[in-house]
Image (cartoon, rainbow, N blue to C red; front, side, top):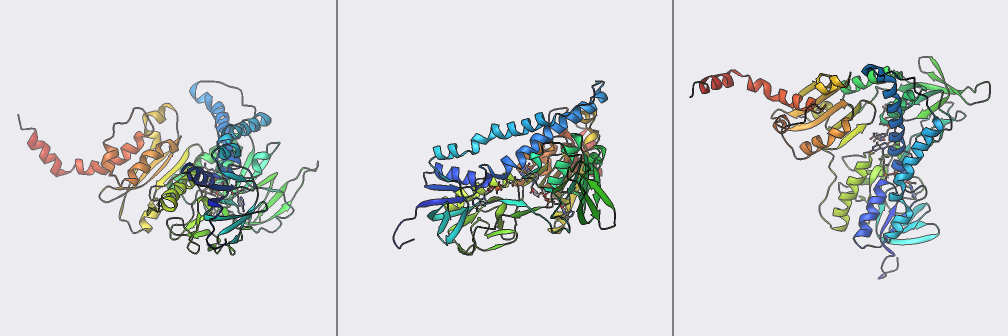
Length: 484
Ligand SMILES: Cc1cc2nc3c(=O)[nH]c(=O)nc-3n(C[C@H](O)[C@H](O)[C@H](O)COP(=O)(O)OP(=O)(O)OC[C@H]3O[C@@H](n4cnc5c(N)ncnc54)[C@H](O)[C@@H]3O)c2cc1C
Ligand SMILES: NC(=O)c1ccc[n+]([C@@H]2O[C@H](COP(=O)([O-])OP(=O)(O)OC[C@H]3O[C@@H](n4cnc5c(N)ncnc54)[C@H](O)[C@@H]3O)[C@@H](O)[C@H]2O)c1
């Protein structure tokens, strides 16, 4: 940019996914001149290849499971028939319904200059896209992440799927082999199993490895009951193409112990890598590692003060990346305060919720027991089995657990919930942990009866039960009862 001249844009945003769209919307709303650059589909991963299609598919899968399980309630139904074409129309229709919110037309109407092209840095204050050279006051990198493609011998000729292609299958997979038992692998495993496919998950460690092992154990039982084969602590040595006689592609997964598993499709779900390639971050003098763009806790690049990063691609120093849509929104909020209002805003994940949308759902808010202990906390653990609530009995919920992690003085640090619709309970815990509330708040809450959430109240109540039943309290009650 020539000395003294003003830049073309106040804010240039690279990527129109959850993080970039929120950033562009608030910046334009505050009257700034904004360019939003997207090389793919408006809405990014969440709308097109992530949260939305996966939850739409899971909804269909859960409906099929409900039909299969109706006999438990005295309702006899024929086995459900899966109409794959109609199912795909449901998934596509869900995306189409939400798409206008993320559309180019909506953002143009806000006054945003939407550029449909690939963006890269040409200088620390210049981005190029679609043959245009854009100078900026601030650039926000919101280019997201993509599925990691591991280096597995034989993978080249085997047709593999990622989250970007699995929702496009015109026929249901006969036998879906899933590599990786994290949220993507597990959600897709249950969805496909309940939709009538054979499913095998190959996981190098244990499934739901970031979650509490007790909660993961319940999920393991639920998935196994759905017919998912879980191979944990198992390394994949290689894959071989194995087309069927009619020429339809197939594969054999060869495990490190020599076992051979034949399947029709392979889904790679072994984690995400930031989309750094092509951004020419060197030209922009933007520091990065393979985890993402290195920022301070206010999401500002540590090497180019004009540049910020948000969403999956952001790697705030000491906190690390988190790949969730609600984190993308949180980042946009931090950015609004830090970048535009120059307030000392920082990313804070202390009360962060995350949910794996299987049935039962696995929700974790704040710290797991292991994380709290690693952080040096002297913790109290409280549990209550969800199936012991009256609501669970009525609804025949066989598996579930609430596990609370608190300080010795009763301040809630973390909550893990394995229960149907556990995600719907997460807000209460995010509020409690965020506000550093004590378990007494939860134990004293009047909850509607009968609800699964009562399990959490019962777990919190256990913190106080020994104190209530102590000899001292008994003596006080004994003295008080003598009063007229
Ligand atoms: C299968 C699956 C299920 C998920 N389910 C959930 C869920 O239930 N809940 C949840 O909270 N999260 C979920 N996630 C995670 C969530 O989708 C991501 O955290 C979220 O999409 C991140 O948003 P983002 O804006 O950072 O990136 P993205 O959505 O990836 O958007 C980045 C955009 O930048 C564009 N781009 C990249 N490079 C350039 C460039 N050089 N020039 C121009 N444009 C560029 C890309 O085309 C893309 O559109 C799921 C993810 C997957 C894969
Ligand atoms: N419901 C949700 O909120 C939701 C759903 C899907 C994805 N996401 C986001 O996307 C992220 C990525 O999800 P993901 O499931 O791909 O990744 P992940 O990193 O969470 O899990 C990947 C799993 O693959 C295993 N793995 C890695 N390499 C392997 C190999 N060679 N062989 C066998 N197993 C291997 C790991 O041990 C791990 O358990 C999540 O962490 C989350 O942030 C969120």
